[in-house]
Length: 315
Image (tube, rainbow, N blue to C red; front, side, top):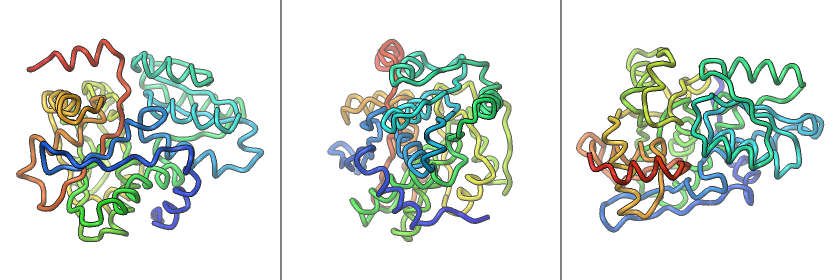
């Protein structure tokens, strides 16, 4: 399979400049750890990079007709944000169990939001896109989306050229595919580790088996990390096989403690999905390769009630 190149990621960096924030790499005083806070993006998550790059790569006629996407929340907001910047319509299909804060934020960006059962979001989006002649912007199964997410890795390599380990949350695989591609091209000695919730560890099992393994949605939906309930596509799985050195799985308790640690020690608000990579550092450090560790804090979109409950829960 033809994989995304570092040249495509560099092209994406040029496209997203000014639309996505070049987030800082924050060295921590409480641990030998560097955090990449994608929670500081305009829509609160890294997804803006891939969505904007994919829409920017469309021709004028495609953009004018509008775009469609399906998402549990962060990609929904990213597509809505990018569409608003281009002045084009966006229709977003979200699962009816998506966090309300993410749904309302997507609506506030001007997108039409259609809620459907969680196991019908992709099929519903495909039907709407065909009916309305909209261009689909997938959450991860798209070269331009992967290249856009890869700009996270490009920035890490530029800001910490002696990084030894990069921890990346793992779900549909777009972020890990893009970051891994950039890191392997620019820092070939660094290790790229995917991090998955134990309750949605289909990719860890698949990589061990050497083939994609599907878990039913009712199993993946158990994790509190709602942004990590997807499964890789053939495209992203091929990338993950090429660029990941290992996968670490973390428990729900470890994810919750990572949310609290990031809030109290790093002064960063991270949703469970965004805190998952840091959970691997906090609880599985001995299993990581040596070297300076970077953790990608992929997003920080949470409703106040959930955030308050997580911060109050000390196990």
